[in-house]
Length: 398
Image 1 (tube, helix red, strand yellow):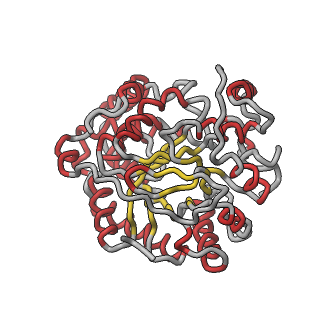
Image 2: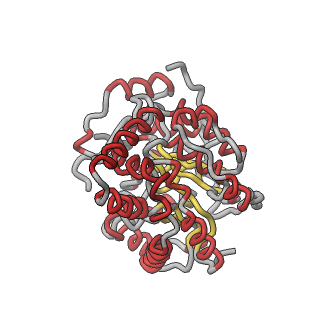
Image 3: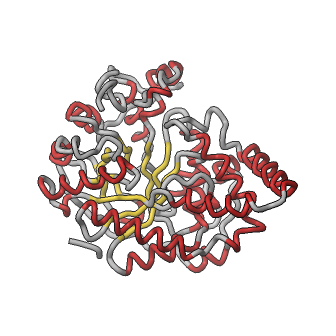
């Protein structure tokens, strides 16, 4: 595998909506957010541009109403470990200013490695830091599953049937919309839709649990300790939402506001691999999410365009992930990617570039997108992937 693919074989200061994307909502079948919640949390005003690590060779875009001026290419956390982080000083020297991480990555070592990067090479005030509340969705699904397992078989069968129907109605697994980016991803649909099917009758027994608040607080405190900072610019919760309904947990917003008042976080975001259009439309509609990181690429892009445009209009910043994973992957179980995907990006994006680089460049031609997240495995990846920042190309017909 060539250097610009997601991974080569064998390589291992301080804190200071109604309907969104009609086509996206139609695809996902997302129900409108409760009116009371939207009314209680009006859309915040956009902040003045906030610059960090501005370098002449990098292009920057504003992350929605946060005001954060983010480099067009940002650093993903997958490759970052205690044995593989020093090369990122080059990325910062080239103007990159956004570091993405999560407790789940390398069992916390990603955050520890970024902490060493900040302690040894890069000042905290040169970069924006984002972490996630890993495991939050799974905890909620466990609580619903405990209820499900105690129900009579007749009731369980009815819930299972409704879950299957909802998945089909929303079209979340259409082959031109759903892509598998990591092993086990598709298995997330079963528990997610089982929970959604149960919500009308059982949400009062789960939602609003104090356990959610404790989990968020403890997760964030652990991340702060591992990286050695007093605050994050963005916290993403849930980490990997599968349905718009997951955004309705009241403890997410309430706990975020508590942590924000304490100066430990500044903005709230969410990430999504599954049903990214539905999640983005739902986050925009609810009004309290400032940013969304979602799977957006040359294969599923048409389905996300309405939701991305509406998010931009409402001040929600959008960062694309999995842009290159549509045409290359480091997961051996998913190799090789279908050749037609590679041929498609080669047709659309002119020039003599590797398919993953073209995939990033394609995404950045969308003016309503803030940035693409890239796995920077080594200095070769840094030089190749950051070189596309600011470039404009005339896209060709597919």
